[in-house]
Length: 318
Length: 155
Image 1 (tube, each protein chain N blue to C red):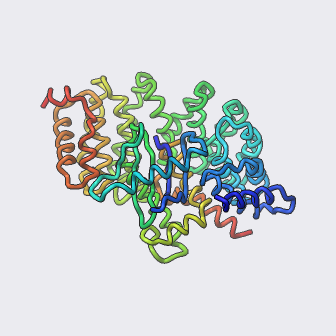
Image 2 (tube, rainbow over the protein chains, first blue to last red):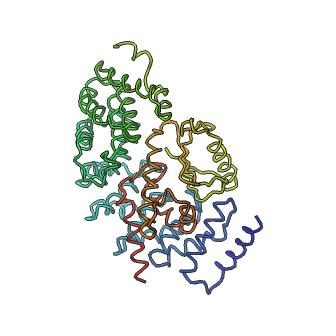
Image 3 (spheres, chains in turn yellow, green):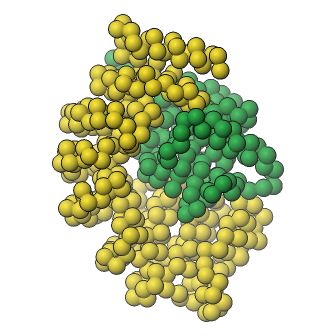
């Protein structure tokens, strides 16, 4: 503990010194991050983190933003000081700076300043580079989480993101949609067809190969889609009927011997039990759970014991 | 959702911590020590998911490092378990450009993290935001950091 106190003293001195270069400041920030990680507050360095983000060159700026995201929280007044820097970087010609500004915005942003930044972020939704579009969508997701009424008027833009030709941008929009659909499934039933189509394409291996994880196509995306379908199909026979095929396909395809396919299977089973029941599917799902419970792999046994279903329903059609 | 991600060694020293829910800075060391104690006390035959207070822990061990993720009830444990592995594979891809051995099997990995704390954070920022998984494509996760490195080199 003495060592840390000494380190903090040294940092305090160095950040205050006018001779410290931005490059040095970057190193100092990382050390400050360390101290805080070990439980020792270094609040005197917060303002300097912001300065680093403002004045540093690209990598230094990124570390400045990182330090801010670790030191501060949403309600901190210091965050207001960052807004101008973020605005400037969002409009930079250097795409790396735009990316990092969008990343910071997605992590924390003062609610009251959203109107100031919203138009700039919205503009990025149509940027030629997919990474910028994707990060802009995630920033809007953040805005939706902290101030949903501020983004009411741009729901049509979310739709565009859902249909974006780049799968990364589409995936980003699913975060917003999962939230929207969870809160109000009725208003989004019309998206069922699109969700089913997307899942079918993913499961069918239509994504570029680098979206694979151990030969499984975009597993976390599959899981996200399965969750969305669960909300859409719940207590709604018509909507559920639209998804039975793709659910069956997912069950079938995920029959390889890897943890991640089991994760997909688990989610698929959960969805099958949540939506309007179809006996064939329920049977297959029950078989799946049975295999989990019987498996020698301890992690699978654990999953088999979690009840994703309503007991009442299981005994019915079976 | 993901509440936090920790990389802690067997001695209980935190090598990296990332919180997606507000936890007071003074409370973190004790939470982290407690969490690692729980994971260390697990026998080999027990599964990698632990009930902890009112949420769950998913942990995975790589050499001397434990990676522990705190998750809410609604999260799919096995998908997080594999997310951790995907993350480690990304670290391996990034760091083994300069070293020839496999990152996650070597005891060097702890040092790599300590000496590159900022970079590991930057990588995690690409994968998880607001407690949600936002990117899992390894190339896309690394692209911003690689671009940063390139720009930094040029100066």
